[in-house]
Image 1 (tube, helix red, strand yellow):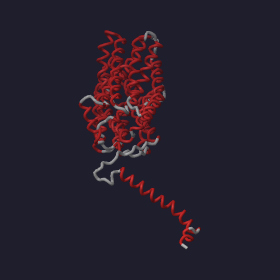
Image 2 (cartoon, rainbow, N blue to C red):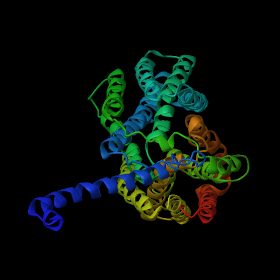
Image 3 (cartoon, one colour):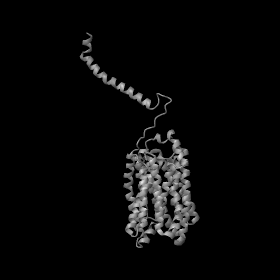
Image 4 (cartoon, rainbow, N blue to C red):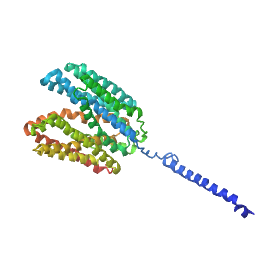
Length: 449
């Protein structure tokens, strides 16, 4: 009787329907146990395992790149074209050089201080977006109001206030990327940041089209374009939370703190960027003068076309190299390679005797330098010592963007009168080579670099 009941069709159906449920319960209990063990909940003395990285969606990555481009648009057209044009109209050709040098000096100082102060303030208040929006509103208003200044002291005052407001936006915006972009996407981020110089140059060309707008109208156009670029990531970016980026890892914190004082990753990354930025600043100022010394027929619009070609080529190169660095987990290797190529381009420029060779050398240097700076901006985020002071630390890194403007004139005046541009480019090639050597030594000591 027992056998007949056990083997009846009804019981067979019950067994076949119960087995999947039973196996699901067993699987769930085992999986739950593994989860509890992985989180350290079954052993109170066991530290929690590192949190897993969550990739940011492409929407946030591209909107952040657009916002970063908006930050570049906020100062490139104004400082390179609109402000010098205003100064020439007020002071004349002879005095304008002194006026612009004074404005550049005080502007660099206030930009450096403002970036550190407001980025640090965003650390203390534990919010970034409020500072970004406030800086956006103030900097746009001050840029438009600069049209009212008609004396050198007035221009210095409004430029200083504008630099503080601008860096109220840029400092927290840079730190916001460190809060939200995981290490596995920092190469991709660096590639996207290469869009900023090209879009800024395109905006400068757009607002200076003859007859398009008045002087005050041009400033208003720039302010509107910056607002359109920056606000979308604030309003609809919706980044995925990255808790692993917001806490210090006790196992690596002491290792990261120590090299700041001695000679470790943070110091090497800082010095390496400074050395390349000195070369960039020198070429930004004296490119036209050097090319005209080789070919007097070379004009301003020709230099603008060369710069545009360099920035456009750098975009896909930086994107491809950045994604390669993410896939291969080689964050620093593209940096020292790019710095080495930049040094080779400077050597080619030093030896150039004809215009085609000179332009070819600058293309090599310009593209590799732009790729270096874009990827370096993103990879710097991985070597900072503490998430709690990320904004402040990035503010000190921003000194590598402002200090070259103060150092470069002295280097140029010391070399060009005695050795010509050949001596200048040789010196800059040595600086770029030292940058590559520093980063190469860093990559040798870190398996994921």
